[in-house]
Amino acid sequence: MPALFHTNAAQERMSRSILLRLLIATFIGVKGAAASSLDLGIPTSSQTVDVRIFNVGNLSFAGGAHTIFHPVLPGHQDNAIPMYAFLVEHKASQKRVVFDLGMRKDPLNLAPSLQDFFTSGTIQLEEHKDITEQLQAGGISLASIDSVIWSHAHLDHTGDMSKFPNTTRLVIGSETDTETYPEFPNATLLASDFAGRNVTKIDFTTANLTFSGLKAQDFFGDGSFYLLDTPGHLPGHLAALARVTPTTFILLGGDTFHHVGEARPQPALQQNFPCPAHLLEEAKTSISTDYFWSPHSHTGSFDLSSRSQQFLSISVLPDSFYADPIKAQVSLEKVATFDADPDILVIVAHDISVRDTLPYFPKYLNDWKKKGLKEKTVWNFVGKSNPANLFTPLNRTV
Image 1 (cartoon, rainbow, N blue to C red):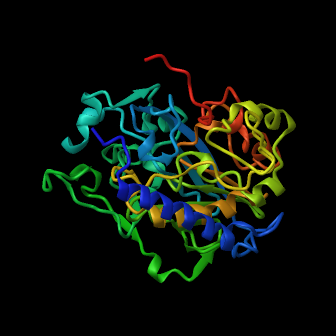
Image 2 (image 1 turned 135 degrees about the vertical axis):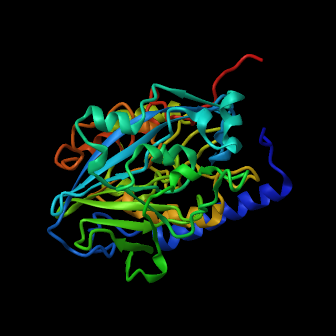
């Protein structure tokens, strides 16, 4: 099992990470209210894609929260997350792309290096339904899927590629580790993930587009769907930016961050999306002032409106699930500028704060702005009853 306590070196890395985050925020995080996509460097286009979302299932990771974020308050050591997959349909060409697959339904058929997570009970799956089953049940033929895009090669994103026909190409970041079992005994991927399949590696060194500091590749060549270079969580990690109307977007964040408290709050977000009054009131007692503070807070009464720093930071512990926490924090801060933009809805792969409010397949996400989805959900995570609220220690008897 992973170590649960900081080493001195880890504490030093944590301090450097927090300092770096503050410095990055100074230069990146505050750009003023109501920035437009042009301010972020996104070219104009009339071409769009349709986006629909699936919850492949829910995953619980016993004692794993410290490998994802900091601080972990008493009683919140376990990490519970949904796993989202996205169907992207290019209107001009009628091509279909699936971004992330969630986890395969039969985890004991994963590479041996991963099976112990399940045999030991460290990871448990709940309400799991394979993405291929959900697609076919919804009338989407697997043969109609032109491409599968992995945001990265962790087991909760790669699914079971062998279920897709060989005509479906696999798209990955160029730095993705493609070693497979059984040729490499400790590999986490399987030979069946790539067998007989066209594998396309996205090389951002040739990118001629940059959005808010993130290198971008135009996937369809018409400005409707971009892949973004978001290094840090795992080599080859990428995100995607889908244009769902000529002026509105959805950013598919993968594991750029796992909990929205790593990206929120921030001054521009507060300015563009003021927290609703009822959640400001709830936050007074749902966020512990023993662990979090703001200029207008008082002991036992947290003031959310004056908080400008994100609640959580990326884990820098030796067993962190972030391969390079410093690079990951930089990517996170860049994505946070999209999160503050009124025309961009950011959905990361495991955001439990919106699990019960997202419009799932067969519904479309395209009209998210018209329906006010962002205003309705962006502050969900501070609500007392929301499962993403990890900001008050739980009373536990030992």
